[in-house]
Image (cartoon, rainbow, N blue to C red; front, side, top):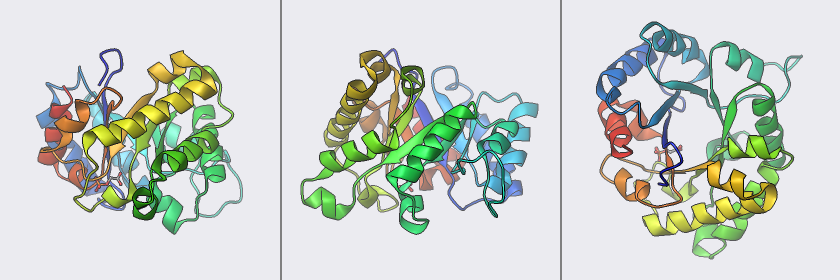
Length: 257
Ligand code: PGA
């Protein structure tokens, strides 16, 4: 982690937690992270149906935590059955939207092109995207990681202005590390993070590259988090499974202090 970037630890709850369960989790979590939240930006990304309940707890209990959604559509409104727009998320006080998670790419047909539309819509809606990228085991084993991730970044993040690029959050999540208990060695993850930063630099200039935050994601646990956070180009984590439990998520947050 570099000193001039505020670390971000974001929990991706995926399709877990009803609104009632989500409200309990955020309250339990708050008790464990109050000492960290001046140093670490903490975000939780519940399912759409739990956003309102979690948002209300954050507001009423004056928690220094940010709210994020896990996806959105790129249009502001219209006849798009089942879709949720950035405007709807902003109204619920979301600050972040995860875009292009590998599960969305795999099960819901997202491409770099649709990811790009969503990234731009999230900025236009006054929030920030957490754009996910990362290679499959096959690409990793074939040595194609950097080329693949660079293309995801170039295409997924095209057409921004440098100010927006400076506010980007990019999560590097090797698909083979998500939910598997396997992780890359932290130096290797940092190599990819550095490539991502260099790609942003080539697209939007060095100030944007130095300001944007790059998270590592994939089987982050309290036991391994500090190894990733010790790397200079890794500015935090996107956490799945371990974000569903207040103790383990707090352990990761506290490792980022
Ligand atoms: P995991 O998921 O922490 O359960 O591996 C990370 C993610 O998919 O964002």
